[in-house]
Image (cartoon, rainbow, N blue to C red):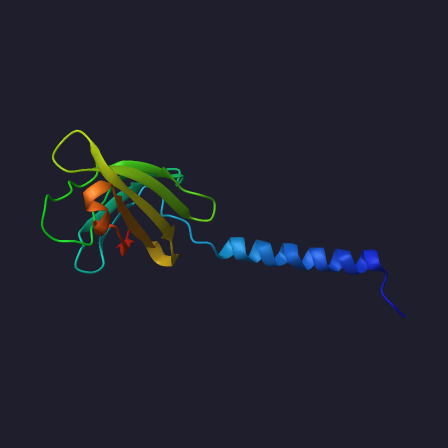
Amino acid sequence: MSIPRTLRHGAVLGSMLLLGAGAAALAAHPLKGKTYSGSVNGQYGGPVSFQVSGNGQRVKKLTVPAVRNCTGGPVSLAPKPTTASITSTGKFKTTVNLYFEGPSSVGTETITGTFRKAGAETGTLTSHYNGYAKHCDTTSAYATHA
């Protein structure tokens, strides 16, 4: 005796929904209203800090260093503090302009983050420089904790 096709499809769909709901339940969320701080890993490190909004939907006052994979020449100024939206899966991403001493942007830095359990958060800083500083492009990992 075989199981009708519609019943089999319903069982498969139901199983997929349960698995999806379980994965969503495991996603870590930011601690609302808390300040997170930490640092960039490796020799191009520096402090990373931000606040989570009271409703847990935005990263505010995100402060990161300008990371680069080169020595000598002018030093990039740290990007101005920025904000980012937090997704329902506990992730955020934003891009800021990088400057040397002057009004023109010399590249960008993309900051991504993922909230973990117990007030932890990890992410990456990816710098893309224009022109003669292109060889300074790099990606560095960082970690913060509330």
